[in-house]
Image (cartoon, rainbow, N blue to C red; front, side, top):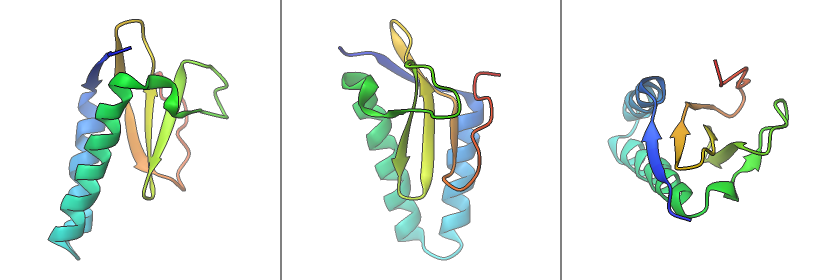
Length: 98
């Protein structure tokens, strides 16, 4: 199952903000975190259901993956996964569908 992986504009902004925040202390670590997040998102194309069901939502098609301290939230659609949110693991996802 190879699905297309798309990033929402908001998730792209989240990734940029995370990279900028981490880079204040370490450019190396910022690149490492971004690389790992992008790699995890690409693996979603082959294994979209590898992430866990978001507990607060409870829908089998709404998944999240944890990368370091961050949560990558995405719905699994028939032909793609859409990265909707990338937030710190301690924050609540809220309703990522809106």
